[in-house]
Image (cartoon, rainbow, N blue to C red; front, side, top):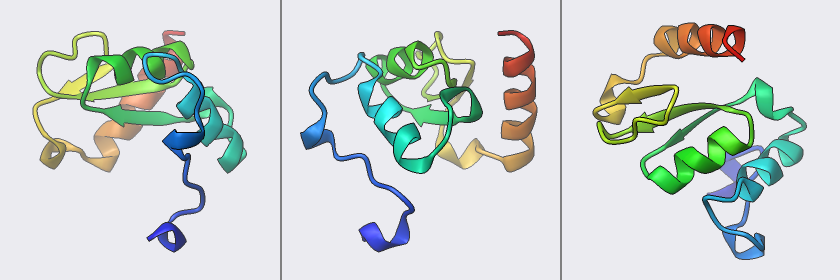
Length: 94
């Protein structure tokens, strides 16, 4: 399955787990991206905290993830245009 992705961040090689931002920082480095160029999607509070600490735009899947830049009830609501608008607004606010 790894062949389907440009980069896979291996959680087994990460020293500090979420809510530390290390796994997201490793993923950015592996993809050659800056954190502020990235939108990350998570379904857990620790993941949202890690994303926000990494200075990425966060999308929380689940109504209770109120610290996310955007919260959706389920992944079926993800829409590219909506994500584009979110990213633009979030970047202006930081």
